Length: 237
Image 1 (cartoon, rainbow, N blue to C red):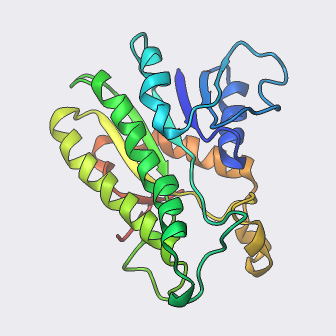
Image 2 (image 1 turned 30 degrees about the vertical axis):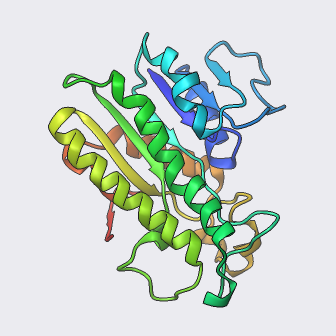
């Protein structure tokens, strides 16, 4: 089994690498910059692709797909806050810069990855693609407001995945592509907000990785094109 994991230096991405490595599967682990913690045990089962921002997915990953398509893909890239911006609590805090940062990380990166994969797919291709989204990207489920840029970028991602899934169901009927809410995970993304999260609802990155891997293995083509919770239930758009 070959697994592609982008955003592999983040908490969830790294735990997914460890999950599949422990089961002796081949892994392509993609990071934007250089990750000093890579491949600490010198395992031959993990191929690290460094300095690979989304704009370079087609250039750096396409040569690998010519030999073998992944059986599972996990896109773990995204941003909620950075050194310049925290999530907006009110409209007056909205800025074009923050919105563009969120849109590029949370939606555009997924589309560029799918574009890099598409030329190698055919009607017999069978793989599961899971792109990390968020429940707060659900328009139906938005009862609290705030977090404008993050909510909009994840809602855009969910629409993008729905649209891709419709096209691919006609062209590549065995491919499953979904956006997935992984649940609140102990990571740098959630760290500033963990005081408000009950301990029983905060999962370790290893727990989240196991859940996502098991979900990926269980999905069928009939479930493609949805926003899913980590347990496989559907979250309304």
